[in-house]
Image (tube, rainbow, N blue to C red; front, side, top):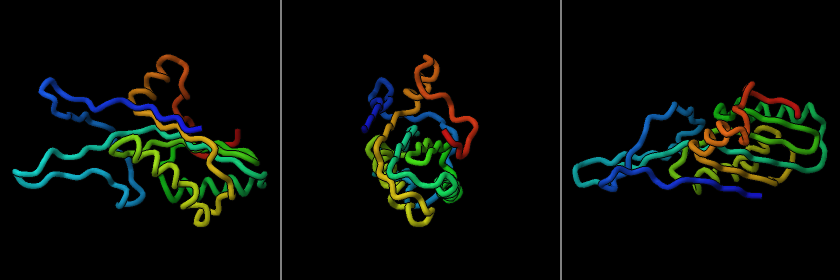
Length: 160
């Protein structure tokens, strides 16, 4: 299952793109910073990033719970942008905020997360079975209407 929900760019009446202040997002790797700044008078408008709420679901053959927990804790330690993880012996769910230029960039990063860190965090050899990427406004709208996921609290790694 892949579920992408997004909204178009926000602009003023003249058609110019505008941005709003967002809470700071800690980045684990400098190469994932997607904001570029236009330099010089002839340069075009600066590219901006947005926040996307990502839910990544993985599953596979059962693994001892202690190993799953240790792997997810290591992933959270290596990448402090992770909000919360829930796990069982044969599946897990990871939720976090991603800063990206657009939905496609946020989804691409999410789809690489498990595989790229499988060996360093000693994660189970599970496959990605679900991905949801929604923009910040949609996330808050769902929570306010009572049908979205509740805010990740407490933050951390928890069993189902």
